[in-house]
Image (cartoon, rainbow, N blue to C red; front, side):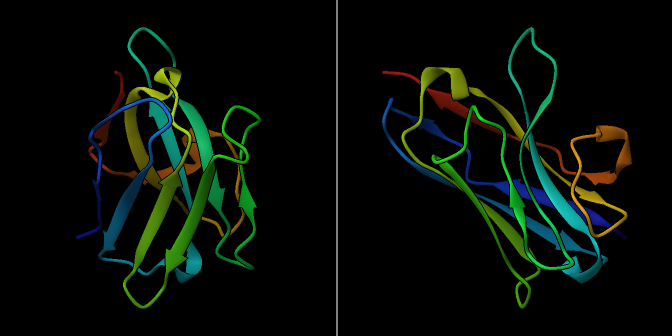
Length: 124
């Protein structure tokens, strides 16, 4: 059974850091690009990072570039999202998703498998 399970969400103060994890089971990360997406209340879901399975290339939108870092541990079949210098506008439910091809896009319909999400709240 294919499954993605996110963890690591929490309440953190502005300027703080969190590391989210996305553990995959039922398939290996070698052949799937993995994206992190987020959805804030009243807003559309948006992509915040992606890592290609072909060469490990990473991608970020301007809103998080320089603050977020995506990485993967093939041996653990897990992808991480390190989030630094968090801002209140980063508050959202964060999802990881697996794309059925090795290259990254921001097109959410190309992502076959989705996790259940983990809540990140940035507030003082």
